[in-house]
Image (cartoon, rainbow, N blue to C red; front, side, top):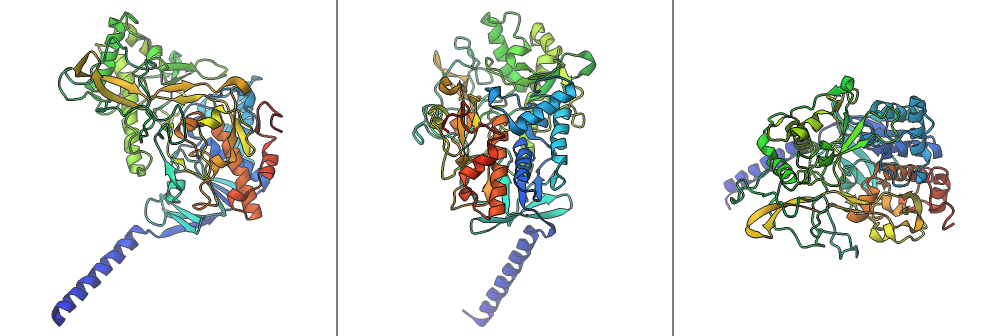
Length: 567
């Protein structure tokens, strides 16, 4: 190689190094501020709020609650469901019950109010936090998505970085809690995780994996809804995916449908009209119309189905005025407010991508109500039953009366050294490291909407829902099971100062029961106490003494069920 060639190569290499260095500098934005706390909690969900309150009850240190969005209070406040999903109300005490009683004081009733007006619930969470000025809440602080967003030394997280409006903020703490619905902190901290469904063979779970056909929440067997544009072409209609469906028991990466839980009312002076989403096209709801047609043709609803069949319209739970309703999926309808197939990629998406996914969910839910209330092809009975309702004008007044929080029914799940499985739900065993109890059933909404061959004419494709299931917890102990401390813990080899109460170490089947807010609150209490003990005693979270953890928890949660059992 000539000297001249060598010089040219060297110059090119130098140029490449310079470009690379400039790229790295560009990617690694400068930190505009560093904030130091004893405990940092990522996620202003009820689990995160309660974790902070529980931690200060152990040791009155400094705590930051850092929330990625402006949705304070998670699904309980910004999402609209309160703490309604309780299987056995006798299992609830501690901060969850305190909050419900504070709601009751507002309405001047003597019973706990589990699903108040959202502004009442929000004010009472903030009132609980206000008693501790050393707990600070920061909104609109998503984790930075560039390199170096989580700094670790060995298995210990030293700091995290968030992207604020004024630049990067670094948060330094001794212990961290990921109380978010997405599990981003655990993921960026390089904890093992999964999402979707395990196979039935992985943990020997009979309810796991892809499910066999069921008529529950499915299209009518003898009145199929065709999946193609003209019943014979290969062009699929919106909101259905091509097959084939995987064999029952198989693993996949699909998740149950997300949605928005709307507040509805029939009170004329508080009704806001259903919004028409941008770029609304009624042709997108051809599946809904075909389904309505089958309900009429079959004689099930000859005049057309009421809105209360197509979606569940629950009374707000223990809500004193009695004039607000919670719009949810339906246990009988095949086409509901659950948005099937459109959450693909959400778990590992950027926040920009998540906003795009959320917009698709808004289009679907708002479009569903627009179609039902206005399209001339909808039977008048169905249209009129829809028009009885409107959005609650006094809820989420700064967001068009629409919930700020997308209902993320499941995000990622960490894989700890101990994984909670179906056996832990139904085995009725005493759990030595119990930190609370759960009582909700195994509640899996539709996971996959797929085009399958019509059994009567294989040349045609029909729409089928897959994955839906509800299994009650065995009633040998009142339909209650015990929650292991191991749920909160990443693998010891991966993270030793991080607790994860929401995206916890559970299989898809067991998470389908754990995933409700009253259970998250209990796990948040345990995470807060454990974080404080780990900080004060300079312990790894895996080494917190169970007996000491339980001694702090026993006044606020039931460790075993019935009370006193297993002790």
